[in-house]
Length: 249
Ligand SMILES: NC(=O)c1ccc[n+]([C@@H]2O[C@H](COP(=O)([O-])OP(=O)(O)OC[C@H]3O[C@@H](n4cnc5c(N)ncnc54)[C@H](OP(=O)(O)O)[C@@H]3O)[C@@H](O)[C@H]2O)c1
Image 1 (cartoon, rainbow, N blue to C red):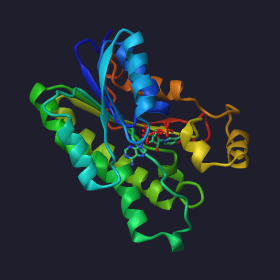
Image 2 (cartoon, rainbow, N blue to C red):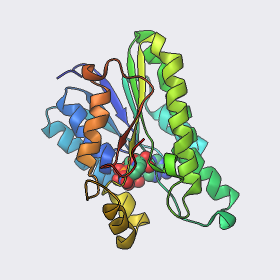
Image 3 (cartoon, rainbow, N blue to C red):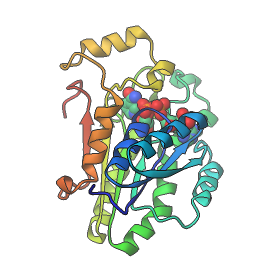
């Protein structure tokens, strides 16, 4: 129970990786702030699982595809203290060839996957600095390193920016008692791929992965939890690749 008395905000925790992280953080004693965009009922199920794990939490709505949406979400948190921030919300939004990619689509992908993290982290870091302790984990992607799949340049670029932001934040805030790291998932079997990948694409990934399978949310969430644990106390500014060996860096 190393998170007793701590509050963890996990964005995008209505499903997939974020949902599993919410339950794991609760099992270690954290109060969990669960964020969703479209799946309120799923967020409620996550809260039920959080309570079944012996913890407690609250649910918050937020659409991060516009700056206004992010600020409205942040305002809804009120003056709750956040000791642990898991910037996990993310979405490919739409696959489109680069030459057909509209400026509006580009801006919404970058806002959701990159700029929202700047806004949310900037709002919540001062409290951590005041308390002299805090943890931030940013969820990037293997796309940050390989440019992403077909039609995903804006998403991949946003995630690459997020990886760089993670390192910069780690440098600036380590002296203030805050550990900032990231997790870079490979292909994890979640809603994300039900929407954006075909079975052929997923089979190609399985064949190119030494572990011979896709990842799951549970084993990805384990790494997020580890980064907020005492066992990771000397880890700062790292992006941990969770991809079954698909890409070794
Ligand atoms: N799955 C993978 O293979 C993979 C690989 C690399 C990186 N990632 C990253 O891992 C993170 C979690 O993804 P996942 O695979 O667990 O997918 P997921 O199950 O679909 O979860 C995505 C989460 O992001 C939220 N979200 C989507 N659009 C949003 C928006 N406009 N504003 C605010 N929140 C929004 C979703 O909320 P609602 O469902 O409530 O709308 C959901 O909670 C993402 O950052 C993703 O980019 C995933």
